[in-house]
Length: 540
Ligand SMILES: *[C@@H]1O[C@H](CO)[C@@H](O)[C@H](O)[C@H]1NC(C)=O
Ligand SMILES: *[C@@H]1O[C@H](CO)[C@@H](O)[C@H](O)[C@H]1NC(C)=O
Ligand SMILES: *[C@@H]1O[C@H](CO)[C@@H](O)[C@H](O)[C@H]1NC(C)=O
Ligand SMILES: *[C@@H]1O[C@H](CO)[C@@H](O)[C@H](O)[C@H]1NC(C)=O
Ligand SMILES: *[C@@H]1O[C@H](CO)[C@@H](O)[C@H](O)[C@H]1NC(C)=O
Ligand SMILES: *[C@@H]1O[C@H](CO)[C@@H](O)[C@H](O)[C@H]1NC(C)=O
Ligand SMILES: *[C@@H]1O[C@H](CO)[C@@H](O)[C@H](O)[C@H]1NC(C)=O
Ligand SMILES: *[C@@H]1O[C@H](CO)[C@@H](O)[C@H](O)[C@H]1NC(C)=O
Ligand SMILES: *[C@@H]1O[C@H](CO)[C@@H](O)[C@H](O)[C@H]1NC(C)=O
Image (cartoon, rainbow, N blue to C red; front, side, top):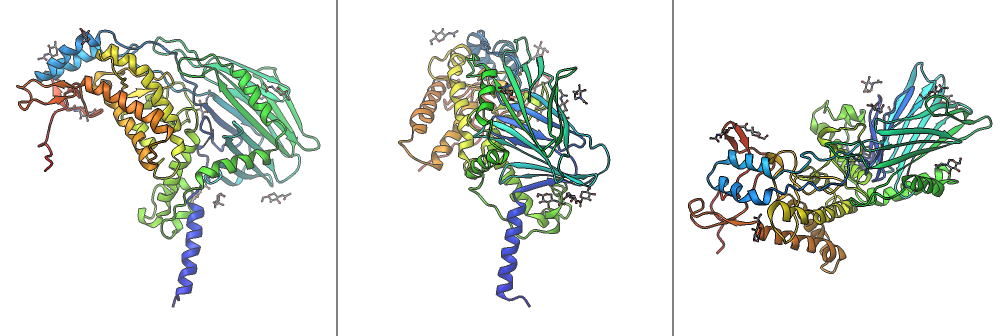
């Protein structure tokens, strides 16, 4: 029979187990583990013998700033609206496609920096492999045993030190040996190896008729310890750094670009990288680790989630748990892990510089799915939903900057696309160039209501901390809400009485994003006006 005391013990034990499991993910096979300091991203694949670390910086995008606004739109808008009133939605959408869309029609993409390749001589049988992420510390660890020696790779992306740090260690002296080099698919790449550094430079690619203009520099600095340890830069062939006979090696990576703001790309990325590395030179791995863990846990450590009692499924590798081998109810802890992973990803991909994009910050290619942009017809919103309730509201700071800068560019879009001289407007995607024009196709893009939805997040930010004197409210949220409202005041039009017999003032165009409302002339259309579809609410 279980006494109350026993039950309490079991309860506390299971809470302890659950609490531990709910911040750790691990794999017994290679798997992507994303690290990020909000600006820099590193994907640890955990491969043996040849590790690949995919590198990102959140301002490495294709193309350059341009004027995308379609100057024909304001003139064509009355005709567009007339087609809508006539319920000729085919010609309405065709008019918007022909006269209102941005040039170029597609928006620039988020791109990769490239890969750090780490080639080890561990080509034989590997045992005791474990590739894990501790989200409470934001440290990834890969351990395995090869020929009787246990090897460990420990990595993190430090926000305060502004670098990605990878330590290669073993439980036997002189065992660390590898060959490190960079590769990139980016434009005009250069590679060099000097002393204890490896450097790669490149440029965002030209795309959709716009030249590439983001220049970036990636430098890795290598240190090795051990009596016979060697670090050798090799410039014969593809530049590389060879480490041999080391007890331990540490790789410190800095990445930077020429981006300052959407309208200023005058920074010197090399100078920034040299400065960043100079700032951490002389710090030990343990120093940097401690600084990083203190910083990360000050955000991540605010929330503990424990759900029920762990089951045997709770202790499976994470990739097997998400298949719910014993049914979803058997492993409630996975939901806690999932919520914490959301918080982890927000902290890792959205601090100080850019808000998280469609892929957060992690991307290995030139042309990722949907351009890995900031898609603001739900995806950017979804990236943000957890931030206030799960107490990492700081991760929205870059979103406020992004919206403010879209609003700067959106003044011209309001004028040129809608002939509205008050306020600003944006549409369903944006990026580091802070695009505010309708893109892709009218079906998706001709949707000036996107910013209203974005500003809902600013309202929520205020509602979670309702301080009427806050600088956020006074200097950011309220001015943006007011000026956007002014745009909408001028944007609303009176529906003709034969369309709306009660004489409503409505939005035209309007749509439910990406929801076709039916076929007109064999074409799916989304654009219509803000039609009343149910009886008006009445207030007594
Ligand atoms: C990983 O762990 C699962 C569950 O214990 C096991 O079935 C599988 O064989 C393991 N895979 C490897 C590569 O060890
Ligand atoms: C823009 O609005 C102004 C003021 O209402 C009006 O005079 C002008 O004709 C409009 N321009 C176009 C292109 O519709
Ligand atoms: C792998 O490492 C993680 C993190 O330390 C740990 O929770 C997990 O139990 C380990 N898996 C195995 C099979 O040892
Ligand atoms: C290193 O770890 C492996 C695997 O755990 C073990 O077999 C070996 O004895 C250890 N070597 C030393 C020197 O501790
Ligand atoms: C970087 O690594 C990823 C994963 O292995 C790979 O898909 C990608 O092609 C690599 N990039 C280059 C330039 O080799
Ligand atoms: C190290 O890697 C580079 C890049 O792949 C290669 O050119 C070089 O030959 C390698 N060095 C050794 C000693 O394997
Ligand atoms: C390369 O490393 C040396 C020290 O080994 C340092 O003095 C130099 O500034 C480094 N270069 C860059 C670009 O970081
Ligand atoms: C119209 O497009 C929407 C969204 O792409 C789609 O869900 C819907 O099925 C389409 N309708 C028709 C009639 O093709
Ligand atoms: C149907 O579409 C064609 C072009 O594909 C257009 O020429 C025609 O005017 C449209 N007819 C109607 C009734 O909308």
